[in-house]
Length: 219
Image (cartoon, rainbow, N blue to C red; front, side, top):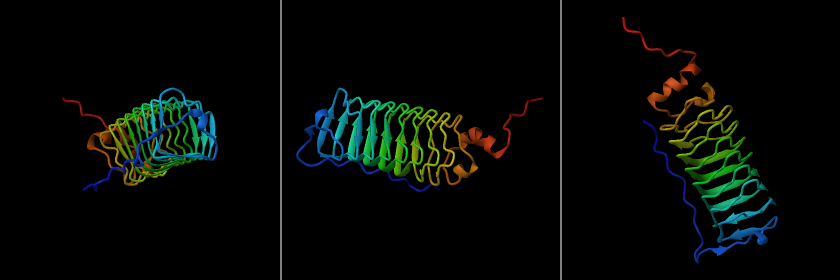
């Protein structure tokens, strides 16, 4: 029997509501707490060592941003565009990303703790060497995304499209891929060890065992 997987802890906002944050306020090595960033382009370009705590990003254009060592704790991103963004060694803790575009986003060396992605379009995104605990993805498009050498033990993928998704070298022990589309997923026997799949997935994974699945013709 598969162990019950607990969903990630949700973000916690500070009491007293959220105050608007203007792009002009952003600068390196800053900490922003209890702020609302809504609409338009953040136009932040490159940022270094910035922390967002208890913040909400709503329908913000973050495409093409280059952020290094950014930290997001107790943060929600709703309806944002992060296509082509490069966030190197980002840290996300108790973060929820919903209805966002992450096409071609780079998150090398990301640290993910209690992170939930819902209805996220992230084809061609790169998560090289990411380290995740309590990661939950549902209804996400991860076509040809790359999770090579990522630590994804216990990660849950619900109703996700994993066509061409590359998990080579990833640690997936305890991961749950049930209900996701595994046609064309890229991984080996080592990565499959300890992963939970559905019986119908075995046809997609049979080639890893070196076997051929064919129906017997009726005579």
